Length: 133
Image (cartoon, rainbow, N blue to C red; front, side, top):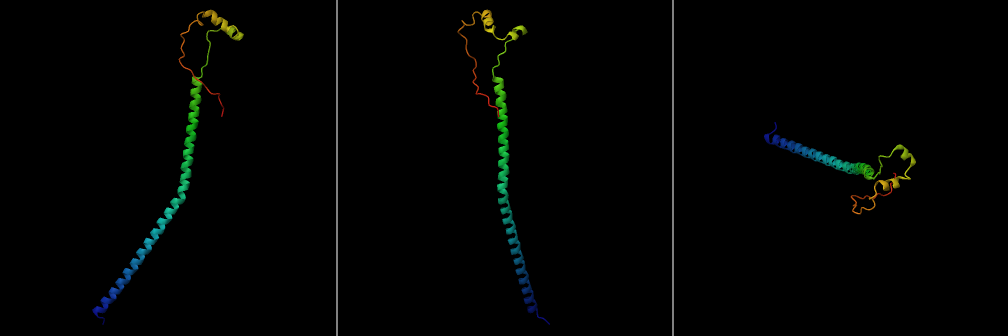
């Protein structure tokens, strides 16, 4: 028969053996998790430049769209501000003749036009030559 002390020693050895195995298993799991975390960080670092390139491309596209919209808005503004002189009240016969006698006719109809000196400029605009893209 085995004694109680022998059984207790055997039980303690098995307990220590099991604790040692559990500690080793926990260490292996921790090491595996550390490796996984390192791989995730490396993967993020690898993907990070790709993400930056994608973000840069998106920013560049948005900037290009803004430039196109501003250019379109500027052209629209320029076309609205461009002074287009239209002379109304001229019959078709006189339009066909051209502008030869137009200045003489204006001078006859408005004799005091040149004598008025209190004419003030309301707005003046200067336009650069148009460049077609």
